[in-house]
Amino acid sequence: MLDLKIEGAEVIDGTGSAGGRTDVGVRDGLIAAVGDLSGEAAGNRLHAAGRAPGFIDMHSHSDWRLWGHRRAESKIRQGVTTEVVGNCGFSPAPVTAEHLDDLRGFALYVPKGMDFAWRSVGEYLDAFDRDGSALNVVQLVGHGTLRIAAMGFARRAPDARELALMQSLLADAMDAGAWGLSSGLIYAPGSYATTEELVALARVAGRQRGLYASHIRGEGATLLDAVAEAIRIGREGRVSVQVSHLKAAGRPNWGTVADALALIDAARAEGLDVMADVYPYTASSTTLRTLLPDWALEGGVDAMLARLADPAARARIRAELEAPPTGQSLLDRVGWENVMVSSCAARKDAEGRRLSELGAARGVAPLDAALDLLADEGGKAYMILFQLAEADVRRVLAHPAVMIGSDGSALAPYGELAAGKPHPRSYGTFPRVLGEYAREQRVLSLPQAVHKMTGLPARRLGLADRGVIAPGKRADLVVFDAKRVADQATYEEPHRYPVGVEHVLVNGRFVIKDGEHTGSLPGRVLRPA
Image (cartoon, rainbow, N blue to C red; front, side, top):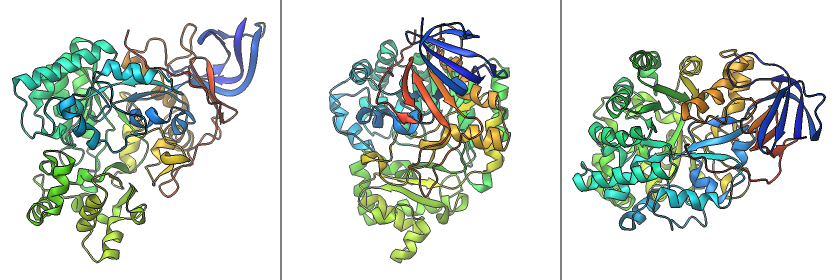
């Protein structure tokens, strides 16, 4: 007898092929049968308009939020059943006693109870797994975290001992269940690394068939050089490469995503395993301190704040931001009127306002308004940059080697996770692809869109038991109405759940039922076979 029989209309199986009318039977957390199950007995029955495998968020930053909020509200209500975390070079482990304060101080958000009692990635994953989660987690190890553990915020190449320590920590992490290495090469201390350092670490991940996921070194004027560097790391490190949230940032650079995709195509033709992910929005979001030149963070956050308070150092920061080495300033690329402060704890007056507006209100230049805000917030504030082209988003979405990643976090419209005006991608990414880009704009067919969220990332990660609807696979399932599924979150009102996602099962258990969270926490840390 089946535990659950889901009957109804279209099943989109995650392979990219057209959907069809069939039933899905679930038993003991697995898909037990697919087909005409009218004669099968079941403990529970559910009539559903449309079904698909659970969505896999290929690029998420939920590891920090999930520690204190296991319900994963904003993600599970989109149909996300697995998140890849530890992206952009930053993960909660490994930790060394010598540099624990550096790691804790660099984190923008540390929930209650996150005590960093662990040291290794294995200890961290065991600690996280004890309390369960609404969804499954795939953990990457941050290159920046490795660097902090070995050498803090030193702005130099590692010596032989420090590099060996980073390699050892990464190898131990892979043995303990990490899926690969991530880098964030626009963020200190990752930005201090040479390509050779990254290759040396990528080889460690590659030897264990891991992944190298990179927020590349530049997404504006240096986009093509940055993609080429990621490909070189894959080639020399003998590792699969995932280019994170592929985009061309800033009006002068619009259209160059076509050249970036051509580089990826050429690498794939060469036999290299290079792919990418994207989110379906024309605005990006990151930390406000990313505005600063990388030397300003040498020594850590306290050293950065001291420089902001020092007139000579601040003058140097201003000069480099106005005339950076790339020859393309933020003002050239975006314009202060297109930079919105999204989240800050001390200066609530700034949330939702543009830097041009903040500067005018204070009678200072927008750049000074940004630096003042950074100082007031202790370096912990976020911004949204309206700097991407719709045509570029559509082009990247349609590419066959690109899957979907939110670049967001598991949030909620209540409690401390409801703070600020974060990017709406944390609530709307997957329904937006299904509703706006598949149903309305028809950039993708519905089966293609689902494939980019399910079968493609599952194959990319080597998740042999997930990503498609077939007997023997894990029962991670989403029931949604293809005619009305849509995102509701906006830049002005981001804490809004989508519509049209009716039921979500994780490992065979309902987490969302009839549109409501059941409180069930059946998710677990997934580890490579």
